[in-house]
Length: 317
Image (cartoon, rainbow, N blue to C red; front, top):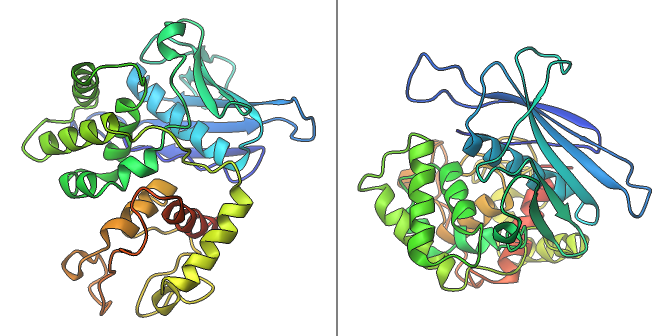
């Protein structure tokens, strides 16, 4: 399932169509994400509802979509509690909606702003989910050079999902994490071939050797954007993308909604900053220059995350 959830404002609706599965007769998954609430109240809990239409998703697909949408909502409102749930409806309306459960049997997710933690709610094994956090540094794992190299033949959105699955429970042993990732591949019709096997191994190593901790969305988001803007000027980004991010012949625009070499997430941008884009892999052959990796910043460091956060913010203005 390829799902990217966009929630541009506090009360918003985003209709997303996922790519069809390998069986052409299957309908693509479609869902609507709604975020609602009042941010004026200090203790207000925002509500996020993701409603699937037309085709009932598998629990693993429900969880992936819900987590993607919750991540987008947290990026906008990191200081607000957010309760997320998933529903299914045969029609475009909501009168016949049925509650959907996640892969572990839970009936939803809740993001606790005070602790920067996401937990499953109801139905699932509470003890097993207590350690599942939004604070897992997905960006550090995705930008790990070994992961970037080993997973270059695997679609970015699938790599992101595998990293999220592998990082879900910090208490799991290596073998259990590998079994969980393999089960996700099976649920999502992803063949474990010679391209996928080294990717799984690299993710497993990155996750079990310190990829946990830190936050994909910094707690001090405005300060992180300011630091990233400074790095943008110091690291030569302006030469190809211009000072306002508008781009030109040497590099694409960063202020529109089109992303050429990643999915536009902070993690995806950070991975491109680490790996660069060789001339042979440029998707626009008319551009004369490759993008060199930024070697002057630590791949797992905060400076690189700040730069990725700033670039991400350009397209959301």
